[in-house]
Amino acid sequence: MPWIRVGTPARPETLIMASRLEVRSLRQVPGFLLASLRLLRQARQAPGALGVSLQADLRKRTFWTVSAWSDKAAVYAYAAAEPHKSTMRRQKASMRESTFVFWTMPADELPVAWDQVRDRIARERSASG
Image (cartoon, rainbow, N blue to C red; front, side, top):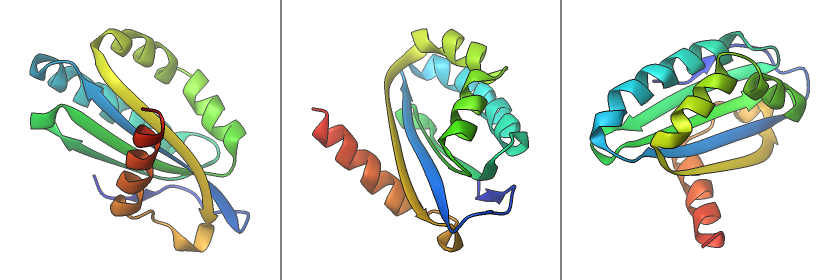
């Protein structure tokens, strides 16, 4: 899904949250994709959200997300709200691996480029072993 702008930055800096999520088997891909689309819809309506995007490599069972937020409190409020909270709890058993990365960037540089997302996640995965 392309970048969807959902809010206007109120500050010059924005918080970026990116993730790489891999499910255990191809059988779990359709359900995880549907759940991801529901959570994307939730994020688009979440207070403090500035933009969201999702990519999926279905054959490799891997999903990538990137979102921009006004601050960390907004990200945590979204993660703790329903349906995100219970969806992640249900999907935990199907997860093989997940990586989350946070950084700040100038709001006027949005949207975040996918190569930057993948690079930051690769560095995090490499650093954590």
